[in-house]
Image (cartoon, rainbow, N blue to C red; front, side, top):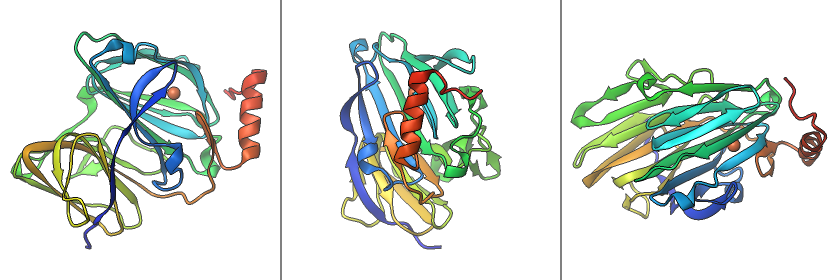
Length: 282
Ligand code: FE2
Protein backbone atom coordinates (compact mmCIF):
# COMPACT_ATOMS: atom_id res chain seq x y z
CA UNK A 1 0.00 0.00 0.00
CA UNK A 2 1.31 3.40 -0.89
CA UNK A 3 -0.09 6.58 0.47
CA UNK A 4 -1.80 9.03 -1.85
CA UNK A 5 -0.32 12.49 -1.42
CA UNK A 6 -2.16 15.70 -2.22
CA UNK A 7 -1.90 16.72 -5.85
CA UNK A 8 -3.73 20.02 -5.57
CA UNK A 9 -6.20 21.88 -3.38
CA UNK A 10 -8.51 24.76 -4.24
CA UNK A 11 -11.66 26.43 -2.95
CA UNK A 12 -15.00 26.23 -4.75
CA UNK A 13 -15.86 29.44 -6.60
CA UNK A 14 -19.07 31.50 -6.72
CA UNK A 15 -21.05 30.65 -9.87
CA UNK A 16 -24.51 31.48 -11.22
CA UNK A 17 -26.52 28.52 -12.57
CA UNK A 18 -30.06 27.46 -13.49
CA UNK A 19 -32.53 30.33 -13.56
CA UNK A 20 -30.24 32.46 -11.38
CA UNK A 21 -29.07 30.31 -8.45
CA UNK A 22 -25.98 31.54 -6.62
CA UNK A 23 -23.88 28.50 -5.80
CA UNK A 24 -20.24 27.48 -5.41
CA UNK A 25 -18.54 25.27 -8.00
CA UNK A 26 -15.68 23.04 -6.90
CA UNK A 27 -15.04 21.89 -10.49
CA UNK A 28 -16.82 21.90 -13.83
CA UNK A 29 -16.33 22.41 -17.54
CA UNK A 30 -13.04 24.28 -17.01
CA UNK A 31 -11.52 21.14 -15.44
CA UNK A 32 -13.04 18.68 -17.97
CA UNK A 33 -11.06 15.43 -18.09
CA UNK A 34 -8.84 16.29 -15.11
CA UNK A 35 -11.01 14.59 -12.46
CA UNK A 36 -12.22 11.78 -14.74
CA UNK A 37 -14.85 10.17 -14.43
CA UNK A 38 -16.24 13.13 -12.45
CA UNK A 39 -17.34 16.19 -14.37
CA UNK A 40 -18.78 18.70 -11.95
CA UNK A 41 -19.30 19.34 -8.25
CA UNK A 42 -21.60 22.16 -7.15
CA UNK A 43 -22.13 23.17 -3.53
CA UNK A 44 -25.20 25.29 -2.91
CA UNK A 45 -25.41 26.84 0.52
CA UNK A 46 -27.14 29.99 1.63
CA UNK A 47 -29.24 31.53 4.37
CA UNK A 48 -30.85 33.88 1.83
CA UNK A 49 -33.70 32.32 -0.22
CA UNK A 50 -33.10 34.94 -2.94
CA UNK A 51 -29.88 33.05 -3.73
CA UNK A 52 -31.68 29.82 -4.66
CA UNK A 53 -35.45 30.24 -5.11
CA UNK A 54 -35.12 30.73 -8.90
CA UNK A 55 -34.10 27.05 -8.98
CA UNK A 56 -33.43 24.85 -11.98
CA UNK A 57 -36.63 24.76 -14.08
CA UNK A 58 -37.17 22.07 -16.75
CA UNK A 59 -33.91 21.19 -18.53
CA UNK A 60 -32.51 18.11 -20.29
CA UNK A 61 -29.54 15.86 -19.46
CA UNK A 62 -27.90 13.19 -21.57
CA UNK A 63 -24.74 11.08 -21.22
CA UNK A 64 -24.17 11.51 -17.46
CA UNK A 65 -25.32 10.53 -13.97
CA UNK A 66 -26.10 13.21 -11.37
CA UNK A 67 -25.97 12.70 -7.62
CA UNK A 68 -27.78 15.26 -5.48
CA UNK A 69 -27.12 15.10 -1.74
CA UNK A 70 -29.12 17.39 0.53
CA UNK A 71 -27.44 18.23 3.81
CA UNK A 72 -30.06 20.69 4.99
CA UNK A 73 -33.28 22.01 3.47
CA UNK A 74 -35.37 20.62 0.61
CA UNK A 75 -35.47 20.42 -3.18
CA UNK A 76 -38.66 19.50 -5.07
CA UNK A 77 -38.06 17.56 -8.27
CA UNK A 78 -40.06 16.24 -11.18
CA UNK A 79 -38.90 14.40 -14.31
CA UNK A 80 -39.94 13.05 -17.69
CA UNK A 81 -39.98 9.47 -16.31
CA UNK A 82 -42.90 10.50 -14.10
CA UNK A 83 -40.94 10.74 -10.83
CA UNK A 84 -41.98 13.54 -8.52
CA UNK A 85 -41.04 14.26 -4.92
CA UNK A 86 -39.04 16.24 -2.43
CA UNK A 87 -35.58 15.38 -1.18
CA UNK A 88 -34.49 16.85 2.13
CA UNK A 89 -32.01 16.60 5.01
CA UNK A 90 -29.68 13.66 4.35
CA UNK A 91 -31.55 12.34 1.28
CA UNK A 92 -29.79 11.44 -1.95
CA UNK A 93 -31.07 11.39 -5.51
CA UNK A 94 -29.04 9.35 -7.97
CA UNK A 95 -30.20 10.05 -11.52
CA UNK A 96 -28.85 8.29 -14.59
CA UNK A 97 -29.71 10.52 -17.54
CA UNK A 98 -28.46 7.99 -20.12
CA UNK A 99 -30.19 8.62 -23.46
CA UNK A 100 -32.10 11.52 -21.99
CA UNK A 101 -34.18 12.85 -19.17
CA UNK A 102 -35.86 16.23 -18.72
CA UNK A 103 -36.33 17.42 -15.16
CA UNK A 104 -36.79 20.34 -12.81
CA UNK A 105 -35.04 20.83 -9.49
CA UNK A 106 -36.54 23.58 -7.32
CA UNK A 107 -35.11 24.40 -3.88
CA UNK A 108 -37.80 25.12 -1.28
CA UNK A 109 -37.71 28.21 0.92
CA UNK A 110 -35.96 27.50 4.20
CA UNK A 111 -36.19 30.11 6.94
CA UNK A 112 -32.70 29.33 8.16
CA UNK A 113 -30.31 27.60 5.82
CA UNK A 114 -30.14 25.42 2.74
CA UNK A 115 -27.23 23.24 1.75
CA UNK A 116 -26.87 20.61 -0.92
CA UNK A 117 -24.33 19.16 -3.30
CA UNK A 118 -24.59 17.95 -6.87
CA UNK A 119 -21.96 15.73 -8.46
CA UNK A 120 -21.94 14.79 -12.15
CA UNK A 121 -20.43 11.42 -13.04
CA UNK A 122 -19.61 10.77 -16.68
CA UNK A 123 -20.94 7.69 -18.51
CA UNK A 124 -18.69 5.68 -20.86
CA UNK A 125 -19.49 5.87 -24.59
CA UNK A 126 -21.03 2.37 -24.46
CA UNK A 127 -23.57 3.49 -21.82
CA UNK A 128 -24.29 7.10 -22.78
CA UNK A 129 -27.52 6.07 -24.53
CA UNK A 130 -28.64 3.56 -21.86
CA UNK A 131 -32.25 3.83 -20.63
CA UNK A 132 -32.61 6.63 -18.06
CA UNK A 133 -33.22 5.64 -14.43
CA UNK A 134 -33.74 7.33 -11.18
CA UNK A 135 -33.18 6.40 -7.54
CA UNK A 136 -34.41 8.18 -4.46
CA UNK A 137 -32.40 7.28 -1.38
CA UNK A 138 -33.83 8.55 1.88
CA UNK A 139 -31.58 9.49 4.77
CA UNK A 140 -32.71 6.44 6.79
CA UNK A 141 -31.49 4.11 4.00
CA UNK A 142 -27.91 5.39 4.32
CA UNK A 143 -25.94 3.24 6.80
CA UNK A 144 -23.57 4.87 9.28
CA UNK A 145 -20.34 3.01 10.09
CA UNK A 146 -18.33 3.94 13.19
CA UNK A 147 -14.60 3.37 13.31
CA UNK A 148 -11.93 3.82 15.96
CA UNK A 149 -11.38 7.34 17.22
CA UNK A 150 -15.05 8.22 16.76
CA UNK A 151 -14.78 8.46 12.96
CA UNK A 152 -18.26 8.21 11.39
CA UNK A 153 -18.93 7.31 7.77
CA UNK A 154 -22.25 7.64 5.98
CA UNK A 155 -21.98 5.11 3.17
CA UNK A 156 -23.94 6.42 0.19
CA UNK A 157 -22.17 4.40 -2.48
CA UNK A 158 -19.49 1.75 -1.98
CA UNK A 159 -18.70 -0.63 0.86
CA UNK A 160 -17.07 0.08 4.24
CA UNK A 161 -16.29 -2.66 6.81
CA UNK A 162 -18.72 -5.00 5.03
CA UNK A 163 -21.53 -2.42 4.99
CA UNK A 164 -22.83 -1.57 1.52
CA UNK A 165 -24.29 1.80 0.56
CA UNK A 166 -27.76 1.93 -1.03
CA UNK A 167 -26.64 3.39 -4.39
CA UNK A 168 -25.88 0.12 -6.17
CA UNK A 169 -25.00 -0.67 -9.76
CA UNK A 170 -23.60 2.73 -10.64
CA UNK A 171 -21.75 2.62 -13.93
CA UNK A 172 -18.40 4.21 -12.95
CA UNK A 173 -18.14 1.99 -9.76
CA UNK A 174 -17.68 5.06 -7.62
CA UNK A 175 -17.42 5.34 -3.89
CA UNK A 176 -19.27 8.24 -2.25
CA UNK A 177 -18.79 8.64 1.50
CA UNK A 178 -19.71 11.43 3.93
CA UNK A 179 -17.14 11.27 6.73
CA UNK A 180 -16.78 12.99 10.11
CA UNK A 181 -13.47 12.98 11.96
CA UNK A 182 -13.53 14.27 15.56
CA UNK A 183 -10.79 16.68 16.62
CA UNK A 184 -7.50 14.90 17.13
CA UNK A 185 -8.54 11.66 15.38
CA UNK A 186 -7.29 10.28 12.08
CA UNK A 187 -8.98 8.47 9.25
CA UNK A 188 -7.49 6.04 6.76
CA UNK A 189 -8.90 3.99 3.94
CA UNK A 190 -7.61 1.87 1.07
CA UNK A 191 -8.83 2.93 -2.37
CA UNK A 192 -8.37 1.04 -5.65
CA UNK A 193 -5.11 1.82 -7.45
CA UNK A 194 -5.67 3.82 -10.62
CA UNK A 195 -8.95 5.35 -9.42
CA UNK A 196 -9.42 9.10 -9.22
CA UNK A 197 -9.91 10.20 -5.60
CA UNK A 198 -10.90 13.56 -4.15
CA UNK A 199 -12.13 14.93 -0.84
CA UNK A 200 -14.37 17.94 -0.46
CA UNK A 201 -14.45 19.64 2.94
CA UNK A 202 -17.98 20.40 4.13
CA UNK A 203 -17.15 21.72 7.60
CA UNK A 204 -14.12 22.11 9.87
CA UNK A 205 -10.51 21.60 8.94
CA UNK A 206 -8.79 18.54 7.45
CA UNK A 207 -5.12 17.85 8.08
CA UNK A 208 -3.47 16.66 4.89
CA UNK A 209 -0.67 14.18 4.26
CA UNK A 210 2.43 15.67 2.58
CA UNK A 211 2.00 18.22 -0.18
CA UNK A 212 2.32 21.98 -0.04
CA UNK A 213 -0.79 22.70 1.99
CA UNK A 214 -0.96 21.22 5.47
CA UNK A 215 -4.68 21.81 6.02
CA UNK A 216 -7.86 22.24 3.98
CA UNK A 217 -10.82 24.24 5.32
CA UNK A 218 -14.52 24.47 4.46
CA UNK A 219 -15.43 24.25 0.74
CA UNK A 220 -11.92 23.15 -0.26
CA UNK A 221 -11.46 20.44 -2.89
CA UNK A 222 -8.50 18.14 -2.24
CA UNK A 223 -7.41 16.16 -5.30
CA UNK A 224 -5.26 13.18 -4.36
CA UNK A 225 -2.43 11.69 -6.42
CA UNK A 226 -1.54 8.09 -7.30
CA UNK A 227 -1.38 5.37 -4.67
CA UNK A 228 -3.97 3.48 -2.65
CA UNK A 229 -4.03 4.62 0.99
CA UNK A 230 -5.97 7.77 1.88
CA UNK A 231 -5.11 9.29 5.25
CA UNK A 232 -6.40 12.47 6.85
CA UNK A 233 -6.34 13.99 10.31
CA UNK A 234 -8.56 16.64 11.84
CA UNK A 235 -7.51 19.80 13.66
CA UNK A 236 -9.13 21.21 16.84
CA UNK A 237 -12.55 21.72 15.31
CA UNK A 238 -12.83 18.27 13.66
CA UNK A 239 -13.81 17.88 10.02
CA UNK A 240 -16.67 16.67 7.86
CA UNK A 241 -15.94 15.91 4.22
CA UNK A 242 -16.99 13.90 1.21
CA UNK A 243 -14.58 11.25 -0.02
CA UNK A 244 -15.32 10.30 -3.61
CA UNK A 245 -13.48 7.90 -5.91
CA UNK A 246 -14.11 6.36 -9.31
CA UNK A 247 -12.52 4.62 -12.26
CA UNK A 248 -11.37 7.03 -14.98
CA UNK A 249 -12.98 6.56 -18.40
CA UNK A 250 -10.17 8.14 -20.49
CA UNK A 251 -12.53 9.03 -23.34
CA UNK A 252 -12.98 12.24 -25.32
CA UNK A 253 -15.40 14.71 -23.71
CA UNK A 254 -17.80 16.88 -25.75
CA UNK A 255 -19.69 19.02 -23.25
CA UNK A 256 -22.33 21.69 -23.71
CA UNK A 257 -24.40 22.79 -20.70
CA UNK A 258 -26.32 19.81 -19.28
CA UNK A 259 -25.28 17.33 -22.00
CA UNK A 260 -21.96 15.50 -22.08
CA UNK A 261 -21.11 13.22 -25.01
CA UNK A 262 -17.92 12.03 -26.76
CA UNK A 263 -18.13 13.99 -30.02
CA UNK A 264 -19.43 17.37 -31.22
CA UNK A 265 -21.69 15.53 -33.69
CA UNK A 266 -23.38 13.68 -30.80
CA UNK A 267 -23.88 17.03 -29.04
CA UNK A 268 -25.36 18.57 -32.19
CA UNK A 269 -27.81 15.66 -32.53
CA UNK A 270 -28.81 15.93 -28.86
CA UNK A 271 -29.69 19.62 -29.11
CA UNK A 272 -31.43 19.12 -32.48
CA UNK A 273 -33.54 16.32 -30.95
CA UNK A 274 -34.37 18.51 -27.95
CA UNK A 275 -35.58 21.27 -30.32
CA UNK A 276 -37.53 18.78 -32.46
CA UNK A 277 -39.19 17.03 -29.54
CA UNK A 278 -37.47 13.66 -30.23
CA UNK A 279 -34.95 13.87 -27.33
CA UNK A 280 -36.65 11.39 -25.00
CA UNK A 281 -36.15 7.77 -26.07
CA UNK A 282 -38.48 6.05 -23.66
FE1 FE2 B 1 -30.41 18.85 -13.70
